[in-house]
Image (cartoon, rainbow, N blue to C red; front, top):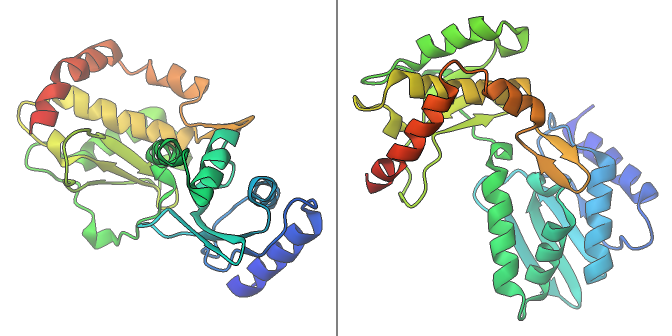
Length: 259
């Protein structure tokens, strides 16, 4: 089925199933054709926004630069949202509605949305060509580490996982040592880890942690998305030097942030 035809079908299905509170257009045409989203969750998000805002035009996107955009014209709200918001909790829906309305709740709404995006960045797709991947650093070779732990975990689902060093960001107030892109099956490690004073066991722990994301993907628990499931946490603690890695990170985090 062609992308446009598929999303037209999905939209018609959502329109048939959603309740009376979901009034306004639902546009899914900007989503990639291979993206698997729950139609009931899409319709639920549209309906919940409609309950708070009235007539809502909801456009879901895969835009990697702007996650949220709101406009109001002729009494009708128009929200462009990244698909990561499908399945979000009630607090996030309320924040989106407050953002659309403006007013006294605006600052709190922005903080809630910012926090949600920060914790769901793995949903953002980044196109990476194989030739752009850089696994061999000046100190640590990520490919060797990946292959070692992939063999140790011995799961076929990890065979297609790729790994690369990421890029330095613009700020150092916070640092994220690793991330896993579920769409691309790609692990990225922060380049700050590629230094002589960073012990190999800690780099291995970060790679191991990201591999577990591939084995134990996020689950939807009632109104919230659980990234680190109980199974994930249990397996994470099986890393041979888990306690040592956690303690080393705690001691040395200020050094990373000082740059």
